[in-house]
Amino acid sequence: MSKVGRTFGVALATSTVLTFGAALMLACVACQAADGSITAIVGATVIHPERDLPSAVSPDSTLIIAGRRIESIGPASSARVPAGATLIDGKGKWVVPGLIDSHVHFFQSGNLYTRPDAADFNAWMPYAKEVERNKARLPATFKVWLASGVTGVVDIGGPFWNFEVRDAAAKSPAAPRVAVAGPLLSMIDRVKLDLGDPPIIKIASADEARALVRRELQRKPDFIKVWFIHRQGDDLGAQAAIVKAAADAAHAAGVRLAVHATELIVAKASLRAGADFLVHSVEDEPVDEEFLALAKRRHALYCPTLFVTLGYRYALSNTWQPTEAERRLADPQILAAMNDLRNIPREMLPERVAKAMHQPAPPRPSPIALQNLRKVWDAGIPVAMGTDAGNIGTVHGPSVFREMEIMTQAGLTPLQVLRSATSNGAKAMGMERETGTLAPGRLADLVILNADPLANVINLSRIHRVIKDGEVFVPDELIRSLPR
Ligand SMILES: [Zn+2]
Image (cartoon, rainbow, N blue to C red; front, side):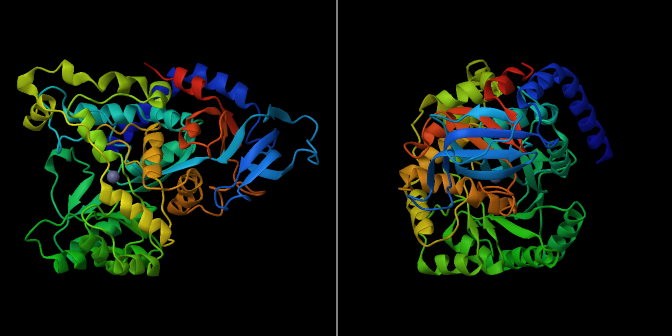
């Protein structure tokens, strides 16, 4: 552990030096933030995603930020802008709360080499090298998130060094807020991911579950996470007892339980055992009244992650193409690696990949998952937008725009999607009193847009400025400052 910690510290320090010039430039744009100075966005349309139409939209408004927090929001005609405030012209612009991605993994990069348990490219690119790269690249990954308008993320499971990621983000001049879970309590082994600090740990009994939860609680996790894989022949009751032991131990310490459960019976068993957060869609069959009642009784959050399986299929068949937003906002180092399949000799390709490349079929989002999202939304269960970024084909940052576009295919309106990505995301972070909405006293985490996000969710990618903790960032400058 200490060795990992040291390496990590060094990596961050090096990168701080590399980006110091860029940081100065950013600081200049940001001007005054945490020091109590004032920024005023004058004459913008302010969106309150937690409200319904028409009260969700306040045209011609002035929003004043003092230090880290929002001081006031009101009609531009009556707002009094303090002398010396930094002015941002809000005419023809929209202001929304900073986006929150409620499901990401920093130990994964989104490239081909990041999940050898799914597609093993070790012969071409050793997995240990990939993970070292991901650690060293964290300051860049943080900036990519901010540039995409994302001011908060939940890393819902990874190695113990995940806790250092949260610390690094908190200390970084340009990073989203980060909530974390540690290693996943899993029903199955994932030996290919074990480099000494495994992200996934097999648990065979309730006692083992309690022991690992105890270890993680020492690091003050935001969630305990269970990877509830149920295969034919597995004893669902025995598995549920493990989940319940984890839930009880987490809840006794005031920590919530997040569960990966993609089948209806498994999701129900998770909710009965105490799950607070379902981190994926139910994909195998339509959710029923019993499921909806269980989720409501637990006040559970539901995160659909609709794009991630498509991302794997595009990337592993060499048909992955960046979206327009990804071309502008993704980490260029990751973009450059996304089509590496062209360069890898055929004999080094995993069997599955060789097959997929031979017969690539355009993947579609699961109709059942789409239908379930709509049912869950209509039942009043809070939905939190999440990408599962870091998985193969789902890049950190701008993949939020892919995810939100697919959510509209389920019949959610742009306002509903925006709510899932702001005020509901804040619930996932456990920060709903601090961020996710625009109101006096809230942290100044927000995005200024050049186009109306309620006309089309893709307009959430047309970002003029991102403000986090009162600091103003320019997306282009953040991306330009990344080491190539
Ligand atoms: Zn995940």
